[in-house]
Image (cartoon, rainbow, N blue to C red; front, side, top):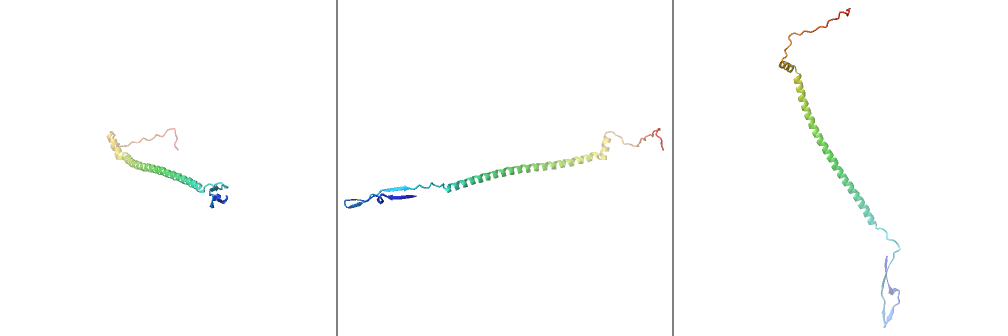
Length: 139
């Protein structure tokens, strides 16, 4: 607290030649009995600044995480599309191979290849019969 005092309040008045003259000097005193308290505004500002910095860091971290995961999903989607195309190609190739296998195994095809290889068709079939052994008795 600041208080202003004048010397005229403490010094006697002098008179010169019938006129009253007052000495006027100003004395200021400062009362410093209590120490100054820290400003609550600066501590509140520090708290708000810390929370704001933390929220900015969390925000940028989440944005970076979103970009990375979105990129990973995009790559996986591209790989899935390529694998589906490959599956369709292999399914078509499998159908062609099955048709080719059926053509090769057909009787007409086998007969045609046999004729082309100079095989002759069988006119009479003779089968061998096993002989019964003489030492085995028949009952």
